[in-house]
Image 1 (cartoon, one colour):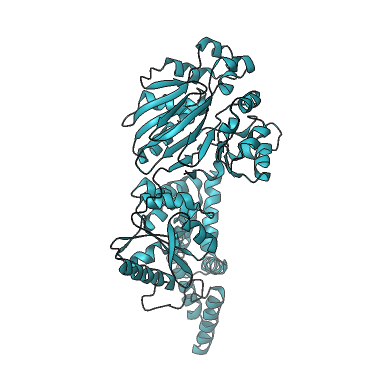
Image 2 (spheres, helix red, strand yellow; image 1 turned 30 degrees about the vertical axis):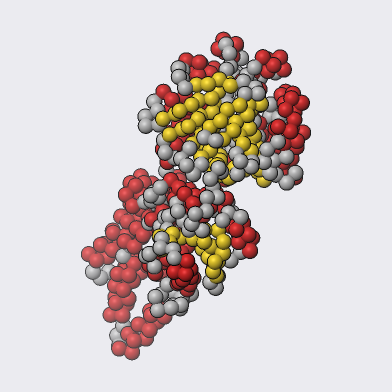
Length: 529
């Protein structure tokens, strides 16, 4: 109730502007109250205005109206106030009481000056701007389109598909409909993009800091062969490394083109980190290539299942391999729920650790959560393969090396069995690798370093146990990654109570020059080369 009322007040303030015309309107209503002529019109104006304010400001009726018109345009309800009619009617009443023409003209002038002084000049630079050309379109739009057309004609390119800043979407299509785009103005208005790749592009282009690796990946998936972006030498250098070369310039923009036949993303994988909707910690990653292969790591809580279904549907609803690092609810909950009712989703392989005897874990329910653990043991998964430390396997040409699993040595070294027995593995593409640490903790750090040494090193790393507790600092220092993924929401990343070590680990990674990704910016993406 209070929230609805506060919202209506904010909409009233938006409509009210400087407040001077509203003050004039109320002054006219007061005048009509005190004057004695034409009571029927006076009652009409006063009654209508009173009824309007009751309906629009009373929380219950306001909520009903909001459900019909939406929040964005609620302020337009105030257009129904009879401000113009009441002010004009009152002005006529005042003028008719003047005894001579001179007094009437004088009062008319005074009233006009009052209206002008209490209003806002409409023809100002915030509303109107001098036209830049006969098309009445931004000059940048015309220059970009002409530059693309010239380059396409010179190089025999028939299909032109452009990715550019959201501000130019509408005007590009107005000027040159032959230039295609992955999404249009309808996406900015909140409508669904035609493809999941286009939706991802829109989200990435809407961010202040651009992830050009991910942008170029999705641009390739959407067959975008041109990018137009404000001039920036750093962007030019970055895009050159992603096979988009600068081919032209306009006054404010650089035009980049990707050559046909370039297969720069063959043998490369897009790794995406997802966050939870309810502010909880969880683990959910997808690995996809440009051939349609998809690998999933964990998935989050049972409550994340519907979101996960939506993500996987957008990626084709076929999972080549699903890796469950361990049966804790923030890792395996969504999988357990989805696997029981997969609907149109197909899963070829499932990889997990063999956590042994159920009863042993149920004796320690605080650490080894009973509910999901029990569900995991009860499930029959024909495509399941258990992995052990030092195992390796391949999925669609991607190499997986298992460094830690629920084996006998874990029980000797730790009392946090499922966490320290979770699957630590490294996934390696043609040139780069990423180390997934799952929930492996401090007790295993020295053992893993001593056992595997340089084999653990990777360009990217998922922090152990969401960055809270987890592995020792010297372990992370040894890995020498350039990007660290914290599977943690803001409250955990920025904890000030001292109850969690995530902020300390975040600081450690940052001062060592490691880029830090967390749920504050998910989905976070890197290209594994």
